[in-house]
Length: 483
Image 1 (cartoon, rainbow, N blue to C red):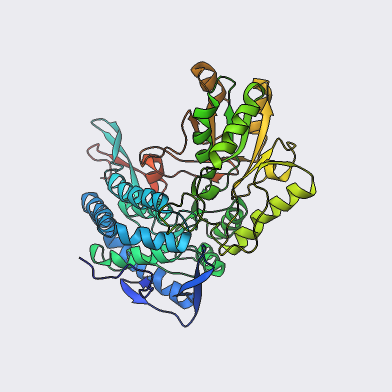
Image 2 (image 1 turned 45 degrees about the horizontal axis):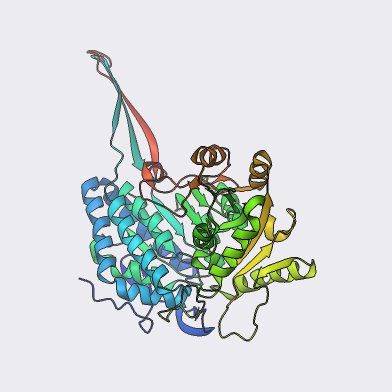
């Protein structure tokens, strides 16, 4: 068992070629609930990235040749190691990300499950033709060195979504955490080095410049990125120079459509958490809530009533259900939507006023009462706790409005008429459509965005295949074929 300390007061280092690595440069990490500096972390130089890539390339051939069962066992063991330190990681996650205990527990134990379940997956060779004279085999081969660029909203889980399949497929991988939430990812990689050969799993930390270096690096074969659509476009452009493989899981503006036959009091809590889980810092948060005219007022009022019961505060406090916005740039971005709504005279059913004297980057849960369809709060992705409520009466019209967006990540439909729920759901342009539920994920369930919400897939065998090349091998078995 590794003796690495997983605590806020511990030393935080990068990991290169299986060894701790510091840097002449450091960056502060803040607690978003207090705006106080938690610690400082290394900021990698270009030379340190080159060293990490060289070590990963050197480790790759042996790791790729390792039997898949051994690679699966190693990935499962990483899950075991994380579970053994779950309590420490939950505390650390709350400190750097701001999410309360329940969400930290969901993320940490979800990550444990992802390691273990992904470790059960494989892509065996397939014989596509077998005759007395000829054999054709289709197989998957690993790519090489993968760069995993991880966001700040779910820093552990969305790193695991990349680490686990990359390793099972036989790649080496370098993790770059968000500069806003580097602590858990640095510690996780440091903690499991004794479970893997040196260089197979590394971690380097730094600001946006480091990500740019990774996307253009000739020694990196693939970039797996989760983040905003605009940044994803930059990644795609940079990766084009070397024709890197890419997986991009990007933004969303997920519609939620509520039918007229719902029970407002029963559906309100589900709609609330569909929109505000993780303080709405969730690519798959419901960001536009379309409520049928016949129940609009009742659902709106039930949402307001329920929202008033939700405790917002420091995630370290046991009663807290929603924490702060994670970082100052995002806090300022969310504040722009509040100001835009006020300037345009929109009605707030709840909230609407940010307290600038709050100790952390806290934003009140806010419901905007039926703003225009072309308003910024409807057409853009605030990525914070402000939700537009919109009326609808015609099914074809609401489907058209729901699909009228450049994004297509997720969507939900809510109602008792299951035929109508399914009919509407199948017409929505989104990678995942939840019907009478939300945010149900699985390592065996493909996750992918339509339109500008991404390229490629994560999770399931489709996601595993994203970390491989397809290869066909043919054999002419006829006697004398080469004589």
